[in-house]
Amino acid sequence: MSDPRCIDSVSTPVSCIPTNEKDPKFGHTIHIENVLPENPDLENTPTKQFIQHQERRHIKGRRLFFAFWGWVITEFMGGLGGNMLSPALPVVASQFNGLGKLGWVSGAYYMTQCACMLLFGQALALFNGKYVLISAIVFFMLGSAVSGAAHNIETLIVGRAIAGIGAAGCWVSVQTTVAELVDLKSRPLVLGLLEYKMQCQDPADP
Image 1 (tube, rainbow, N blue to C red):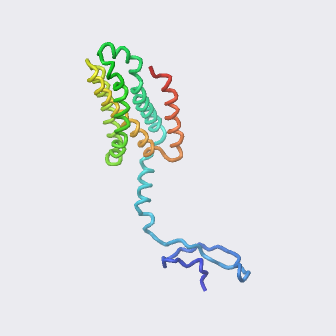
Image 2 (cartoon, helix red, strand yellow):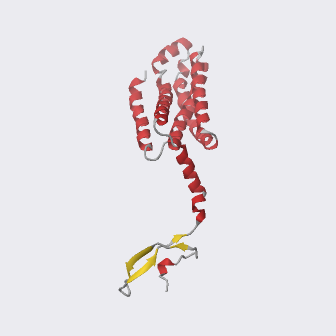
């Protein structure tokens, strides 16, 4: 008579691993088997294939070193862009005669940055993260160029808004890329160093 612990409730064929246990009812040693489904397709499940695909994408060594510093520079650029105009705001107000719109110079940057984070997150789910990150850097550089070439307060605000879009993409893309390319063991260290960068960034702001 088979031990009930070897019976699968859904009548799935089982692979049995022998173990010796003391039968609590009869007091003698019995030979029982652990229930392990015999399913050769388990190795080909979508979840298993996805995990294997992610493991193949993980980077280590020199590639991780250079990628890490690329992430640091990208986040540093986006964070610095938010505060780099603060010392120049009085000059901007006097040169452009735009004291009433001065708040939008910084506000437009952070407004578009917050508004576009979910948009870039969805883009990362649909497209290659490398190209999403590159497009975010292009947005940031374009917005910085428009701001630098501005001859009035309105153009400056538009440039800051475009740069904010790029800053949102830079931050979201870096965090997502780290999750995709760094293995689970090294990920806390990499993310911790990226956050430590923020503490070093604040004193470097103008």
